[in-house]
Amino acid sequence: YQYEKDRITITDSLDRREVLHTQGEAGLKRVVKKEHADGSVTQSQFDAVGRLRAQTDAAGRTTEYSPDVVTGLITRITTPDGRASAFYYNHHNQLTSATGPDGLELRREYDESGRLIQETAPDGDITRYRYDNPHSDLPCATDDATGSRKT
Image 1 (cartoon, one colour):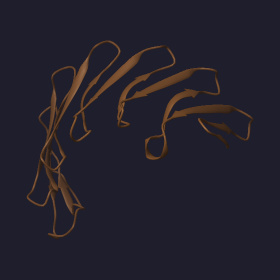
Image 2: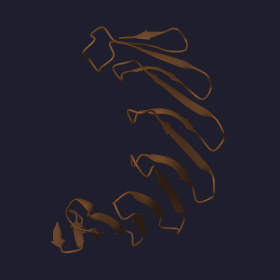
Image 3: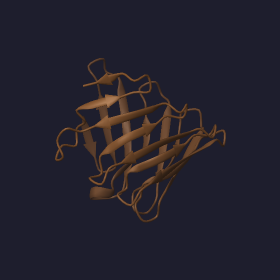
Image 4: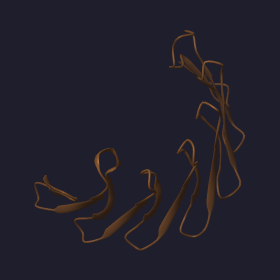
């Protein structure tokens, strides 16, 4: 690794080199451009508070990210072909649903402790999460759409 003010150069054991170009200071320093070992370049754009707004791949295709102005959570992703996915959250900033470009929706439900208790896949399959300890964030079992229980 070679560190400079606005750039980090990474050279591996096979002498392949990647260069990360950065902007910003301290906690807002972000990688805005990456020169890959194969010569390709990818770029990222950030807003004034350091949230990712767009990424451009080596072919010049840009994916856009729309964060919520208050929470910073991503609410929409638009791919280079204009297809969009939307993301919705509860007041605890937990993902409650995601809708893909095809209109299919993933839904999540949480208990009063904020633990995931049910997830409904876009195809309608439901997975339920069980907790045996009221203080644990880790489920002790899951029940899937086929009725199978995993512990």
